[in-house]
Length: 84
Image 1 (tube, helix red, strand yellow):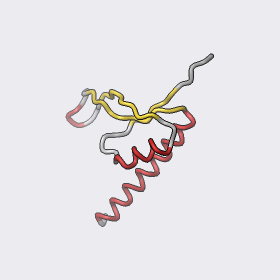
Image 2 (cartoon, helix red, strand yellow):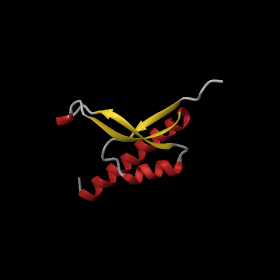
Image 3 (tube, helix red, strand yellow):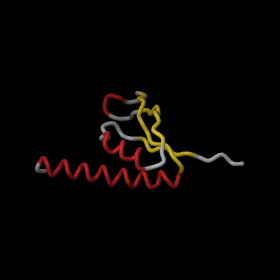
Image 4 (cartoon, rainbow, N blue to C red):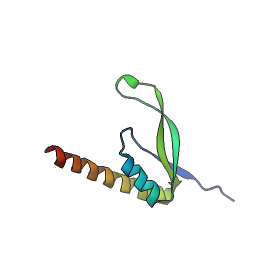
């Protein structure tokens, strides 16, 4: 029997906890830690533990769309509050 493959969606640093919490409570995913090598600013090559959602491919496709939509809503709301 073939073992089921799981996929990760790594949350970028600064992702609002409310979005992560909503994903964990809405979808059949597990919250995991992943070491990721950074490649920006003065952190070039540093490895940092980031959190990710892990689940089956079909679920993770839905999670990625949900995440993008929620993040865009968060950005739009922030722009409205700051008057940008």
